[in-house]
Every structure is written in structure tokens, then in C-alpha cells.
Length: 504
Image (cartoon, rainbow, N blue to C red; front, side, top):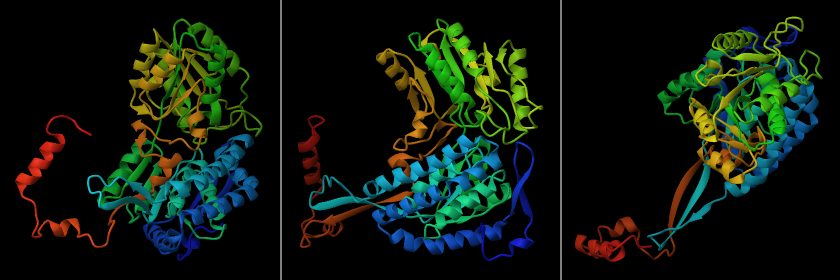
């Protein structure tokens, strides 16, 4: 795997990657400093003009070649993902599939989304008006460890489609996945992605570099550091941050289906998903039935180091301490653990039981702060209005879900639920539809990935106005011409057009 050029990588400090399931070493990468980052940005900038001059259709064809390389090396990439994260084999391969889906969708949509767009030239009908979309240049992509291939591709698919090159800084926990991903992308024939590896200092160097835009996925705390660094260069950013997603279960919901969905939506990837179902707001009418159904569903979930289990390792073992503290605080305040609740040292140092906590109150930390572990909180509420109020009374707003049969009630919840995405009678579905934008509100960030918005996020709109007839004088020149209208004449036109009402 080629990581960098230009510097003697053997002289650099090394960053080791280990399998959280058993602590076995997976490999190591250099720790790149600010000079290495500057070199990577320079290489990306040198490679960008030729790529940017390609038409959107030509770039779409190249994205399909990248997809082909992903398919050809899917097993290899999935193996590295599983080794660095400790997730089951199915989850790792599904992540690679999701990367291919994103490149497929972006290739399909980019030629249309990035085509020049004609707009009305009102009120200057002697002009033709259009919007053209041009690349920013070089985009820095800083990605986390929970989905070490899929999350960077969420950004990279749009970054590359719009004609930019990229510098990728993968998480220090999963650097080998990032290196291999870039290698696969580049072996499609063009050096579109440079990689810098290391710890927070490497990420800080990229944030402070002269990239033209930054796409970051991670915690709000880290986002604030990146935003401060980016502000020095007025570098625009896309921030996809944490979530505390809620499921609202209405009185007429299919309780069994809601419970199964909540369990799957919470425990997938050991709960290490920004759009995991962490809170269930269930009306008191259905509280007991939902709790019992969720218990039954959870009891069928398997956990362990075997790569066929449903739930694998906690990738960042110190997170288990956070999970345990949240559970202690909640149970001390009156909540009840009805499933799980313990770390599983018998399975290894990085495993925690899938857990359900009943009787959680909205003011508890377990209901307000991102847990990022396999813990489902059940919060009884009086009615749907109470559920919407509690769901919105949270710093986060990334995604959510609602279960119910009455379409009018469900649509009302969708309208009032202040979040970036909502799945109806399902969970996580919006993130699996690449045509939908992905992003949040409030502390869950800003900007969008996926969908048409995720392509245009990395393109600069350029406004162009052209005279329809070459013989017509330019508007600006006529302002000082011999036939310049008087202020009174302009005022008369204004009154005739709109002085007696809203008009057309």
C-alpha cells in the first residue's frame, strides 16, 4: 500500500493498528507531520486541473471504473475493515457494497446535476442566464473509524464527481482501511486521492493547510477544533457530526415490527453508528408491549469475537467505560436494565452486551448524550405530542424514525420532528438511499452528503449572464450613456408594475 511520496517514510514514527477483538497487530503506518501534509496537498493540487477539465460524463465513467476496482478487491477491503474495527464479516462486506452503491449513484446523477443550468433572466430579458458548476480544487476529507470505508466514500463520491482531488486523513484506529481504499480508487487509472496517516496532529495539519474545502465526520468536540483552524484560511467545511436518534412509536403502531427495528437499528455495528436508534419514545398505551417485544428481539442477538455473530467488538475499548458510567447514572436515577448491561470480559477486552434500559427519563444523560454503544433507551411518553417535544429537546438532530398506521398522524410527526432525516415504519433507511441527502441540524452538523446535494456540495456555482444579441450594449455601459433614464422615470416604472399590489 503506497501511503506517501517525497519523504523517507522509514524515518517517520509509526502508528500501529490492532484488531480490537484480540489485540493482534494488523499493521502500521507512518505518522505524517505538517510537511508531509503540505506535500500531499501539493500533489493533489498538481493532479486536479486535468481531472477538473474532464466533463461530468467523463468523470462518471471513471467513477464506474473505481466501482469495478472495489468489486474486484471487495474481499480484501472487507478483511481489513473487519480486522481494524472488530465488526462481523457481514457488516464489513456490506460496507464495501455500500461504497459501490454510492459510486454507482453518483456516476448516474453527476452529468445531470453538474450540467449548466438555465435560469430566468428576469428582469433583464435581453440576457441569457445560467449557472455553471466548477470544482473547488482540493478537498480535505477527515474520516472516523466506525465505517472506515463507507464514511469517506460518502464524501469522496461527490468530491471526485465534481472534479476535485482529495487528501484523505483516516482515523488513527483504522488507517490501513483508508490507505487501501485510496489505493483501490487510484488504481482505476488516475491519482485522485492522496492519504496522510497519523493522530490528531496530522488531522490538525490538514485542517490548517491550504485545501479548498474540508469534509469532516466525527464528534462535535473535534469539529470545533477543525472549524477554528479552517477559519484562519476561510476554508468552507462540511460537518457530519454525532446523533442521538429517536424512534417515536405511536398508539396505533405495529409494536412487534417497531421493537424488532429498534433492536436492529440500535445494535448494528455494536451501536457505533451516528444514526443508531438510541432512544425509543413510546406512548404509555404501548409501553409494556413494546418493552416485552424488544426484550424478546434482543435475546436473539448474538455477540462475540466470532465473525459470524450479530454484534462484534467495541472498536475503541475506553468507550466501554463511558457506557458503564451512563448506565450507572441512569439506574441510580431510577431506570431499569432489562437486558444485558455488562461488559463481556469472557469474550475479550472489547465486548459489551446488547443492552435495553427501561424507564429512562428525558433529563438523564443516557437520553441526551451520544452513547455510541449497544444500548437502547426506552422512554415512556404521554402521547405523540409529548414524544415530538422530547425528541426535539436534544442538542442533536441527525436522523430519526416514526412507527404508526395513521398517515395523517405520521405526516404530522415528520413535519414537526426537527432532524435531518426520518424513516417511516423503518430505521436507518434514509442513509441507505443514496439519492437522499445525508446530514443533520444543530449539533449534528451542517452541509450534506449523498444525493444531488452531496454532489453540488463540492462544486462552486458560477453565475453567467450573456447578451442574447451581440449588437446590444452592455447594461453597465448604458448606465452612463446618452439615453440614461432619470430617477423619476425609474420610479414611474416601479409604481406601474407594483405600486397597487403584489403583482406578478
